[in-house]
Amino acid sequence: MRETTDRVLEYIDGAVLMSPSPSTQHQRISGRLHVQLFHFLEGKPCEVFHAPFDIELKNERIEGKKIVVPDLTVICDRSGLTDTKFVGVPTLIMEILIPSNQAYDLVFKLNLYMQYGVYEYWIVNPMHRVVQIYSLNDNGQYEQAGVWKETGMACSRVLDGFFVDVEQLFRP
Image (cartoon, rainbow, N blue to C red; front, side, top):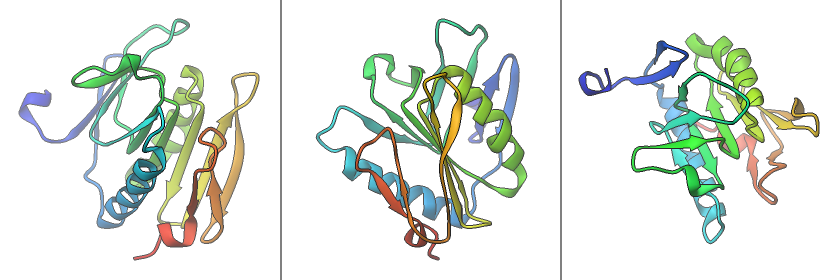
C-alpha cells in the first residue's frame, strides 16, 4: 500500500490505519519541537526522527506487529535502526493532536506506548494549547509528569535538561 500512496499509514495487528494530513499549526509545532530536540541531542547518544518515519514496536513480552508513525521520536538505543525504520522501543515519543484523531492518541496510543515501555510520551494539544507528559514509573505504568496550559516550561524526565517553552511552542 505504501507504494501507491503518500499518506501516512500505521499497521496495528493486521489493521491499516490512515492518518489525516497535518494542519499548518501542527507542522509549525512539529518543526519547533524537532529543531529543539535536534540541537539538544547534538553530541549525545540519542537521535530525533520526525514523521513520516516507521516505528515497529517490539519487545519480548508482546506478540503481534505494530507499526506506528509518531510525529517525533527520540531513539537512544540505535541498535534497532534500519535503513527504513526503527525496530524496538523508543525512549520518547511526541504526538501532536489533530481534531479527528484525539481519542486515538489520547487513549489508544497512550496505552500502546505504555505496554511496550516507551519511557516518556508527550501529547501536544494545539486546540487547547496544552502539553501533557507521561513517564513510566517503577511498575511500568504511565504517571502524569506534568500538564502545561498556555505557559510554563514543559520538562522531560528522561532527557535531563530538555524543556520546552509552552507559550513559544503555540505561537502563530
